[in-house]
Image (tube, rainbow, N blue to C red; front, top):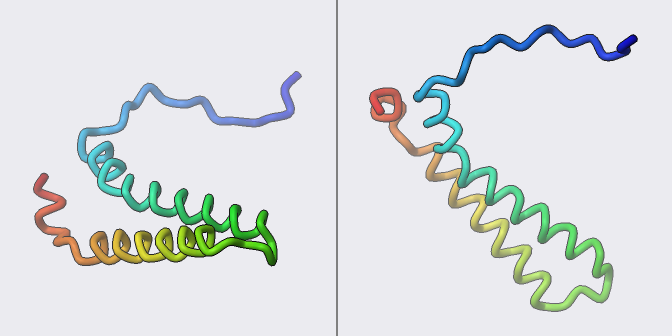
Length: 82
């Protein structure tokens, strides 16, 4: 007896366009993971956080903002054509 009710997964594979969309978002995912790791380091260090730890946090925040800006500024017309 199973307590998890899942609908059967179809044999549909992602299309090339769907895979391209995932690949296009990968820099954002990576930047978010870097920020999360930096936040964990700051929290773990507590009040004794070194300048290096806080610099790593600022650098991760800046990178996330840059990646987000690039994704927001991309032209959807050219993205759909690819």
